Image (cartoon, rainbow, N blue to C red; front, side, top):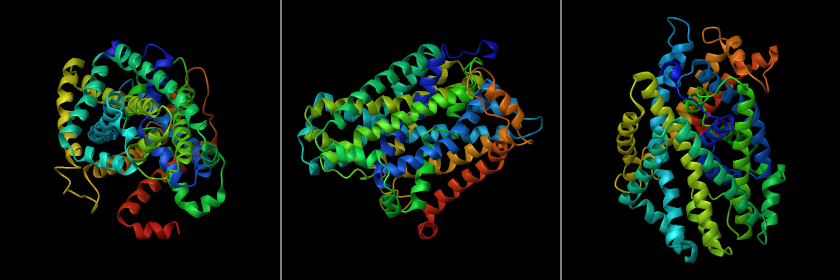
Length: 469
């Protein structure tokens, strides 16, 4: 694409698209139930601290590599590394991570779209008993053709937006989706906090109770908050790097990363404000786990005045959150073929539509036809394996690459990183010896600990339990 490479048309567009990439199911699906599991307000407080200390600096680094190279992760390290160095090898597993993420994220996005469609066209979920709602969720998972159909719809919607280009597609349509998401979320939050009995849920969510923190286990809570703060920003596989490559140099990337973090955190907190008070109002356990959205929340809508309307809006909100991430990651994949292989956008979109649909089929069938494949033992499935490879392997190790590359002399060097990160108006990172030491040595160790503990928790739960008492 050379010097005529397309970019964002506005600063607001960049912030909303980057926030849209970060704002996904980790915010609106995982954050509320993990907050419920780990003690409410105390967990939220620790999460915010971890986000500031660990998630934010790595986000700045990924943006900086992208803008510094003016390329996606497939070529950015190659452009910035010293002659003879091999940092560009990291680009291939990162791009593979984007494909792997889409292999299950498209399926779960399809669930959101299906529930929205069902709320609008049938509304039967709001007239069922809790047992029937749970059975209905299980019935959906057992229907392979249904899951494949809605997965294809999700892939088609996401790639159709990317096919229009950066300005006309990714930027313009994501701005509308994000605006609609924020409006719907505020409406639902107002409805949730005004429900009879919601006050106890608000207190549980917003008022730190350190006794509950001790009950849940301080070590476990801190690791859960660290992991959530780390994964919520979608850092480590280049999804943010490609967006950084499209932004101009008028504003510092520290400044822009701060805006993205604030918006991302606002959505996560608002999702909790919708779900947790609603659960308290109707006697539902807020720490019910991943099934909270599909098997538990419809019970809440069934008891809520105008429940069908609220349920439809909620799943539309969830669909927008998921689709905004799909669009950003799809753009990273398509840019890899455009920048690195010279493939026209239209052809890259068509080829990848077929590829991603085929790659996503095992996950869609993992709950039914392929349910006998249990990679982590009874109850696990294809989605668990794919999610583990992305969340517990590629994201932390990819983030480690960005941290090491930006802060060591055998990489890009701190001076070059800081110059690019601080270029433009707005917030800046100071050249402070303590901060530089933190970036260079402490941050990589923390990322390695996250990666190691994720594996210990999965494969040696006894040792994990001993570590956290």
